[in-house]
Length: 268
Image (cartoon, rainbow, N blue to C red; front, side, top):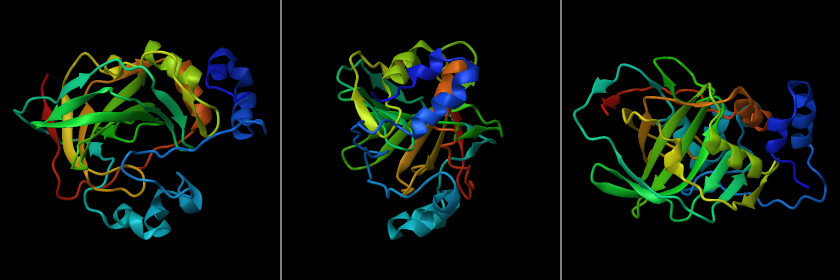
């Protein structure tokens, strides 16, 4: 049977090393299917978050990854020095959806959502495709890094992407994570969700956001993303954060230079 993240929520801290070893060495009879990290691209299997396939080498791994090294609008960034903007916050039209799929793609835990709704950004509509997690956070706010960040990936018919980032602080348990963590495969593969997924449940009460133009944070690092990062974090419990960390101790790209871009901050 494939080991799930639920185990790390039930085991004590003393058993965490055993749990992590089980994730690394899954049962031989487990049948897994890999899945892509983003709807816009299929990534080379050998990129990683450290060593010879790490972020500093992504641009060398494939000609398709040239933007990872040479791009001038790369993500993530440190969200500091933001200018207040009198523009409306993005309007999310997310709806609870049934039939989602929880995917361990070797880089993160991703939830593929059919008919999960959309977001309207600057008058343009983008459909929610999936959301996934990074540990620790990829974006920082005034230099502060958070233990977890969720990315809600939306695509428009013409190929543009809009991604909403939500930060997690250590604090009270987040009930929206429990069912996802419990379903997620402990090795590369996917599992059908037998419950409704409501992405809106992850949003903070405050609607204040940071806005900037950037890229995918994984290869090929395409500079086609309109970024919206919520200014107020939500919380996750220490055990929930540890459970994800047992699978992915570090799956965050370092912050990138802002270059000639600017960061906007919208009010509620």
